[in-house]
Length: 455
Image 1 (spheres, rainbow, N blue to C red):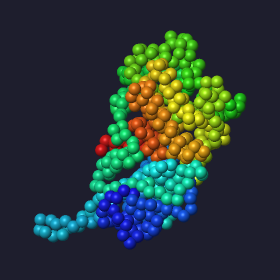
Image 2: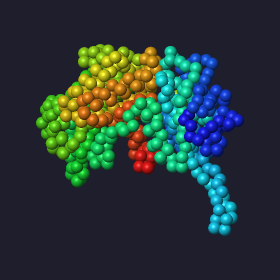
Image 3: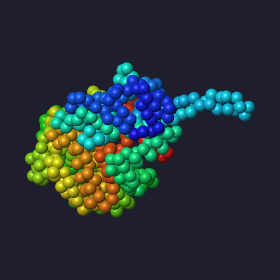
Image 4: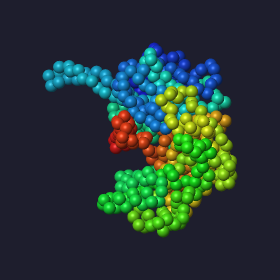
């Protein structure tokens, strides 16, 4: 914990003189060491009992996605909380014109951010007894510790948005993250179309409709479906299995060969055609962090040079049932072709080099938190995430000459704090207009970060 006018006195944590936590265990200190006598890859430490304050937290409600929640009791703070903001009110004495005492409330805010320490990552959670707990885990049973320090940072002030902005810069410096992450101008006030489409004809139809309605697009993402993949697990006549694996870094047959009304033979000619025909300035393409949802195919002539090995994702012991995802169920059953950590940069660089030579301007990299489930045998989830992120960002800088990277499905603090350069991430999961239960969460997920960015 960073000191924000805070101290521990008689077993209570005081912030600006106001009691925040009580019954703090003896093994927790300000600028702390939280310790255990037993080495483990996962610890749950008590931070004490939280007083009743209104809070806003950001927590992972699915393995890929983070959403906000408000409440007043510590027992309402869910597992996998990655930001906790407390609203603290205290009475202050004021005088009117006749020097009569008036009572008023002064409000300040306390921000708690669990971060990374070495190969470990931290999250917060509440217990039924209104105890605030800290979970620390590595994701690899062979990576153990008995104590941690500086895994939860704390600060306070009278403006919650300024606290977050100011303190993130402190944390970035602490974790050696660039404090001046560069946003490309295309991300500011997008006036184009995110192409959730994956064939040449459907892309062209979408672009024509925008043009006909007087809204010429400038930015397009060619989404999932352009790559060459193979599904070993799909059986004829049975429902689709989310187990496809990448077999080539080049486009698949839907983007090759001359088609009626589209005089383009490959991806390069198609991108040139749509830029010239519709005035597009930027074309990005989608791909998963591991190449595709199921990773790389281990027997493909093209991808086997990256030495992929089939690994079976594991759920962290700290993850609750609501973190489950239908895609994870399939990947856990059939496995993922994980790139050899020694060949990660080679794969990314080969892929980016081909895309850049085809006229692609950047990438949207999806399915990022899958890597947290594959850290066993590789030094843990934080270590493996860091290696992938470093290779990803270096290959983007080398081949696109700018920070032309959108991160997606990366809402764990492993990814957030391991990203040294990337500055843009998708804020919410899919919007499903026919599902009324998802719309409130979708709006809240986008509105809270946007308000913080504007302040």
